Amino acid sequence: MEHLRSLEEYKSLLSSYKQIYRNGYTNNYLNTDMVNRYISLQRIYFETDRDALLFFTDEEKYYRLYTLLGPEMKAAVKKQIQQIYNNSNQNYGAPKITRKLHKSGVCISQRTVGKYMREMGIKAQWVKPRTTTTRNSDFSKELLNILDGQFNPDRPNAVWCTDITYIWTTDGFVYLNCIMDLYSRKIIAWTLADTLEVSTVISTINKAKASRDTDMPLIIHTDRGCQYVSKAWRQATEGMTRSYSHTGYPY
Image 1 (cartoon, rainbow, N blue to C red):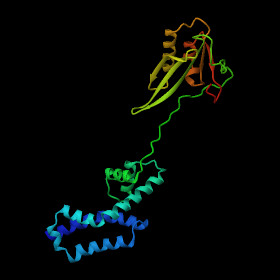
Image 2: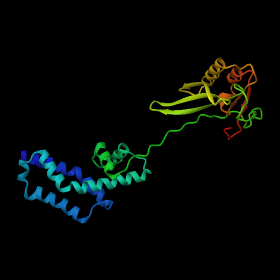
Image 3: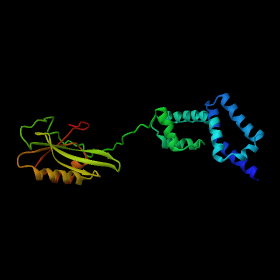
Image 4: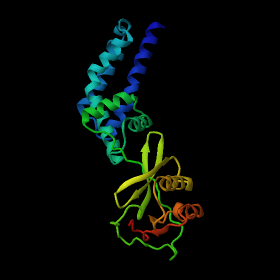
């Protein structure tokens, strides 16, 4: 019984590599010499040298097998990694490539895949996430470009410009709303929020009004985002001249 159990253990060890060879042979990864060596290994251990298995530990069996087949197996797996990497437009990293290999029957760890990729000089291409900050809601003729490209006012607090930009963090997007005085090119108020709600721009404009004198005529220039055509924005900028950029034109 001990003899049969040892053989079964070794057969199980060999079977874990058969799928790699099947895949490799199907995809022309293996040459005739590699196949012959694999057949020779089975003949030696399962026909003429069965009793010798009883004297080997599991670790010894593994390393005897790896010594004979390791270099060819590594080359075959690397070719599969390269193929998966190319098919993904060079976007996949070790985690996704490992899952693809598992689906094809290859038993390999993510750490090993990462090691092979470093040896091959390839890595995942990180694609920066993007989101939309301007959501047009009103394209009527009421939204006029009063500023009309005149970006050099002759006094402070004559023209303010405001916009929203997004910043990617590990916790998701955050949104930065700023107001600039075009006379000094200085940011006079800003708000950082995790949403694009109207309350963000209202908070920023209130900060600007609290820190600057708005008694003289003042133009507030924005894009046509839904926040800047809202009722709350109109109320917050009452007494100012609201100017809007043209459709598809940021100025």
